[in-house]
Image (cartoon, rainbow, N blue to C red; front, top):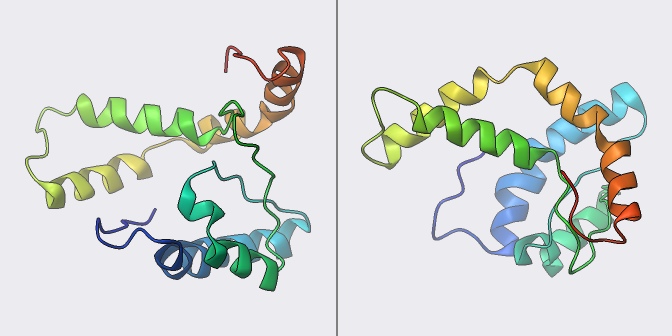
Length: 140
């Protein structure tokens, strides 16, 4: 997980802080281990920026295509929801950004690998549901 400062949210910042940093390290390790890996991003402007596209191309980073008006079936959305629910359920609610960052990191570490694996394993069903709904809403 990477904390992206409010004033560092350009495509160049995204490449420096995320793509060229921890995401690249993680991607490279998984690629070596599994042989086939792809990154799933939404259509956020920093993900579509020239800097991000150039980095992905130069480093042969496999990125799932993400059409403009597509449904968001990325499993990470369920992880974010679980994380938000846990943060909101804390007895000692964070009172500032520093406390919030600490709480997020602590709760992130508690998310079960089994939960993540279940979400990832559901991808074929997610894709099939989107295809059956012709790109419309699904239960995911």
